[in-house]
Amino acid sequence: MTRPISSWILLGLLTLTTLPVQAHRLDTDDVEVRVVAEQRGVLRQYPVVTRPHLKRAYVVARRGERYRIRVINHSAQRVGLVIAVDGRNILNGRRSDLAADEAMYVLGPYERAEYAGWRTSPDRVARFYFTDAADSYADAWGDHSAMGVIAVAVFRERRADPPALRPQKRRPATTRSFRAEAAGTGFGEETHSPSRRVRFEPRHQPDLRIFIKYEWRSTLCRRGIVECRRHHRPQWRHHNRFWPEDEFAPYPWELD
Image (tube, rainbow, N blue to C red; front, side, top):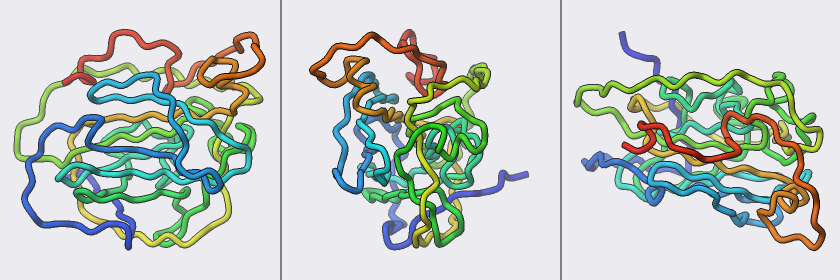
């Protein structure tokens, strides 16, 4: 029994190629993720972790500003993209674990695309905009487990090689606690964004995971990520399943 295929491409932004490619492992140089704000352009990233298959960085959010997620594929192969904002898959709004069986976009070799909102139909999306957590789309689901995080998991296509056995990571418990001043992403006005369904069978595990944590400038000042004129006491932090507060030894499957 084959797994249902739920992969999409954006029309007009992607040209597929039929040339054979080598399915080499991907790393952080092969796929680039940027946050593009409507008024400020590409947002500066403040990296905190960069490893061959994992990247974490902060960006400064501004209340009410619309933004897009730009993904650039520098590799010579098609890739599948599971994209989650505040822990929700941007294609269907469901809770995301960045897994291979989720709905995903497909990006062709050396191509780029921009994802501007929550997909409401094959031809329309509801725009992303920075807002308070209480006004976010995730809050409408009562989900605060990954608030303020843009997450992209990059999958290669499956080949005929046998599947590898991998240890299972225990799924962390969902928490409902969140700070009132936390940043989130709203469900904005609808705009035209044509797409179509394509066949893409991803490998079981992503090659690359990129997490971008967006916060208000005042919050990043208190954390020492950006320079501030005034010094503030460190603020209370809550559990976020996509953004651990400390980085320790990585799981084995993040390194292979």
